[in-house]
Image (cartoon, rainbow over all chains, first blue to last red):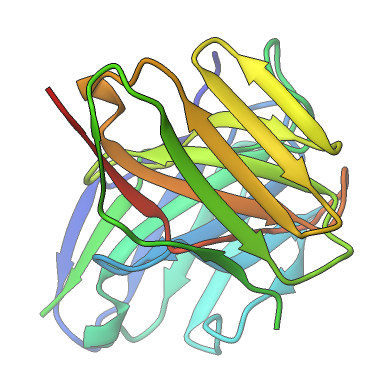
Length: 117
Length: 113
């Protein structure tokens, strides 16, 4: 089964620093997402992306966040000036069909753990 | 506000018994429903999806949907220690198209050997 890959798996940064989290979605998928999960809490939607533009974003996704698809394979989440409360696991996901699943199923990457000190 | 509610648990079930996990959702327009399993420190992985009222079985797992009651459940038969995880209910407003999944807080399940 194809996978969504994310890098880095863990990043530690100082408050106020910029962070870029990278994702390679499944190659034939067209819809891309970022979710985050603060330790012990629920998986929260951040943003969805389709046809090279944001299709929906949550209240969490403020001006400090941006997403980009710089080429045909990568999908990135940038946090411009990290805050302590940005510490969380960030999951990239893509939506599309596969050999064993229908087209509207989200497939998640392994996650990038961000620790802001 | 579109909400998905789950009992956070923990739910403890003896090995070999049936585990029953429940979820309610607030938006009557919801079209598709998913159960994901999440091991500690890992990403969610799909267990089941269901679109129509009734039961859907896949191996030891059965998903049940009742749209009139806005209720979806997951039954795990012959529970194994490897089933110990957090189970996330997720709801999508549309069957297809660019729509996000909204997740519940998850139910932590522990299978007791």
